[in-house]
Image (cartoon, rainbow, N blue to C red; front, side, top):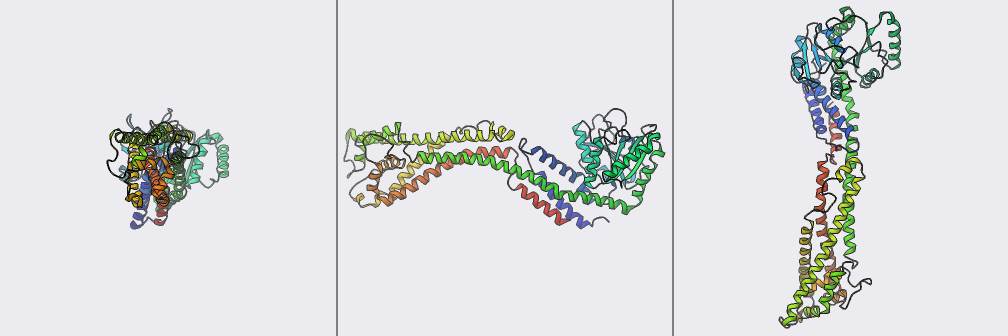
Length: 560
């Protein structure tokens, strides 16, 4: 009994959603398991397009019987014989079937001319130099029973990959299988691989043993039946065709009479035919319970691989940020040019003058002009020192990412070789300069708002906030630690504590350090955007892909 229209539409909608979810998957070309995952995805999509969805919507369409077998088994000859006409090419040259051929009764031809079953193949009138495995020849013959269509597919063991792939799609789109082998090759591995596939899928199967020498018929058939029985296929319908002359690409009618009766029996017994169709459709739908979760596991492996690549980026830049945290605490920046400018600023008396101005304009002349110059030189040296630390740390982080990715297999190695990913970005220096300058300005603003202006000493003394900001920066960077040697000059922490008070100093210190870290973190976030883009462009699925597959599978089960 065919599916009611409403039930068919619900099931077709669930299948369409499943297809859309699977079709949206992308896999990195060289990522672990990518080829297997891509192949599984294409197989499921092809089966949904060519068989499952059309069969759900057209449950009363003729049963599609694929004639399958290894190279040279005589599949095309058998189809021509049953059709009573030369509808498929035959000959000694292999492979003879380059374009699939569908033969049916004229009454049924309209069901196959456009779309529906095998909708992914382009319909053509006849095979020719411009046709290939992606086309489908539709031929009609009144010798074939109504309700049955024979499909002559390319060889499943063809050396041509495109032929093999299309043959696989034909098998995936069939309701029943006629397996053809010869007396000389029935024990070969390709034949049994195909039989194993039929058994695993639960396909309704008829087996044709052809080219059997009359004198050896009893021995050959007996051995073949024993092999089938041992393999669990002893109950399959079997037909034997003797070795005989082939005229005009066809076998004598007497040799195929039993097989023709079997097909006619399917044609006239509508219940039996529909049962075979429903059984195959149910088997395919059941297979999605394992095939889709298996695909989801491929996705999860890809997602885990992507997460590992992303973790490499996060670890490298987190390490760089921790390195900067340490360098900006332990006094390592207070060397070289920065230390020289600090000593110049403090040793000249400029610091004392700028921090103890009771009246504006008290000091004049050359000293007043030189104080801003030394102040600017110190501020510039501090900014340059911080910039150098950030840029060098970012460069090491980029090199670290490239090194980590390069050892993660071919896909990671290819990503690591992406131009520019192993170095800091070209505009990092410009962005870092702006960030450090903004931080210095923000520090002065914090001192102005929360610092010395709140203390009673500010009532009698005017303080230069720029100079106080420089002292604060020097103290924040660790100057005065035991391992820092330098010339004369007040210890910043003692001076700041006296001017700001211990609590205010702590508050500003915490805020200033957090602000600096946040600005550097923003710089690093901007640096890592290119890695995220590289991962997005690599075709690796995102974290939600697997859950969408599981949900689509659940929806399909609910619709059944």
